[in-house]
Amino acid sequence: MENVSEIIKNKRDLDEIEQYLLHKPFHYHILIRKSNTQLPKTKGYKRSLGEYNGEKLDWRKTLIDGSCIHIREYNDYYIIHRDRVNPDDNLLKHIALDSLKNLPLILPFVIPIILLRYNQKLIIKKKLRKSLKIA
Image (cartoon, rainbow, N blue to C red; front, side, top):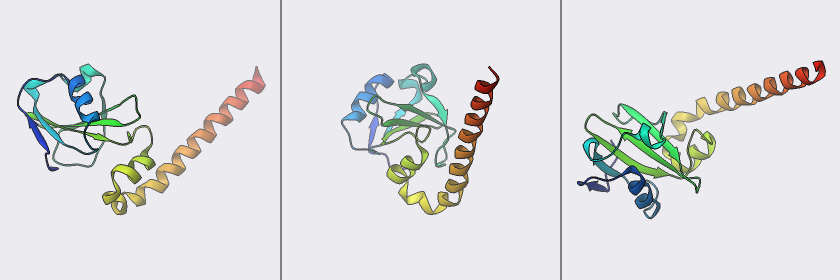
């Protein structure tokens, strides 16, 4: 589990926490009990994968400025912080800006992921060209 910067003991809306974290440094970790806030799903958060720290689930939401709120869900509480980039939006940029300490562990997987995404885009373009020729 990561180091917690602050514990919030009273009820807070996730929108309030997002606004609060916009004024804090990236990776400023807040702990809040589940009973003191809403379920992330009800506030537009999507399930995500993250570096495992003993959590049950990871949730993410991209903010208007391009940064990302990352919620780690444990049995009774959430640990919430803000990343520079949502890995679902740009995995490489997220690794470079938010997960550099994990780069040696992740690097063997990055190149195959990039190649698979590039290949997928080529296949989509090829199918699109074929469908345009037929029509």
